Image 1 (cartoon, rainbow, N blue to C red):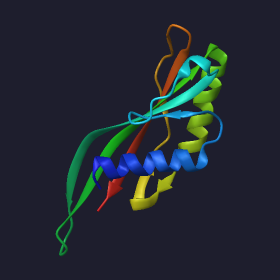
Image 2 (image 1 turned 45 degrees about the vertical axis):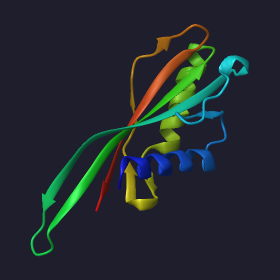
Image 3 (image 1 turned 120 degrees about the vertical axis):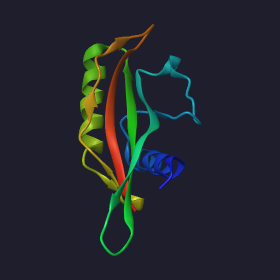
Length: 127
């Protein structure tokens, strides 16, 4: 797995299955002025580790985090959207044997016209 492959799989999963709001990615920016709410997906590599295995070499675990920012005009709606994202993506297994953990929430932020609640998922894949 590379960070580009895992990013592509996470984005593909959301674009194929998420229907609640528009989706923004680093390559697909949206005009949020006319929206009541939307989500933004970002993926970041964290660490990789090698696990020794007898007889067959070693097994590598690739790790990254997926940060899903949930934006809404009201705090209550942003919190609900974050809950829905967590329920939608927690514990999923994607192609390339990519696994997501349960989401962790960051404290909300109030931006100009939106509230932002961030849900962070740990992702891992073994080769």
